Length: 410
Image (cartoon, rainbow, N blue to C red; front, side, top):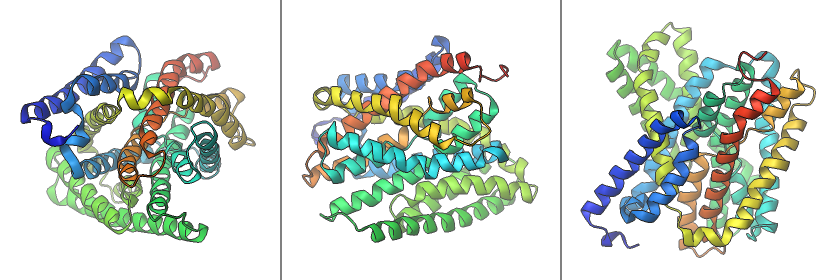
């Protein structure tokens, strides 16, 4: 739809309904005893069909991508803080690293093959699709784990994996995206240098941001409102600067910043001051997750989705039933985990906001460049997200109970 065809009242209605629908889903989900994510995605899809003004990409225009990126970065920052507080047990650190640094590439390769042979994407687009669906993240893993309540060891391990895969997968997707835009695949050496450069930018931005938060919170003193404003302001500033240097380095910077803030505040005895701002931050993140899920799923139309539904569901089924269990089995070999714990790890890999946001921002540019198959990228990613969220969201609790890995079972 042409943005100029939308009236002010339609845009206002679309914005208010996105917020209202997200809030309603998050309110109703506990009563229905399902994770809110199970309701958010279909609700957003239906809203996009019924309300023309609910297409945020249309009325926000060029600002859509940056707004989504900044919001996701704040969510990842909060995920980093929560991960820093939880920590991974010493005995599981090697397993956690394997899941990220070896399991991620395995999933990427398998998803790429699905993109080529099931979805018919050209090789470059299939590689990009594979990178996008690698990501999981706190926006989807966290709510499901909070609902399932597995034992602390599993919760921390899966949270670690999801939180780190989000920015790394997005950064890899951006590298491939730049190669496609250039009209040729980047060489392996160029891709590695770009990736390492993004990591370097993220580390520097995170270190500076963590120090600014520490001294900023100390300067304003105790207080939730001003402390939260300092934290949000610094996160947005450093993410924006990091993205200016290297696309999507800000996501990793936000995650590392959250981890660093926890360590610095503990070291200098300022943990209470940072913690005092968390209730407001948590409220913002909860609302942002709901709004983003509804807004992004509203971008998908039935016309673009229906022709791809079969192959996309088939891809999701392979990722759920074959790739994840096999990868988890390999990555947990030699660990001190029981077979029940290893099975649960193999049954938890939902895709979330970062995958949807990356696909939405990248697909628009690729379509404008007339890249073959680009118009199918967002509907396919949306289907994979929806299927994984529904399957894991509805079955994770019964699976945890059957395996005896819920808190209090062991």
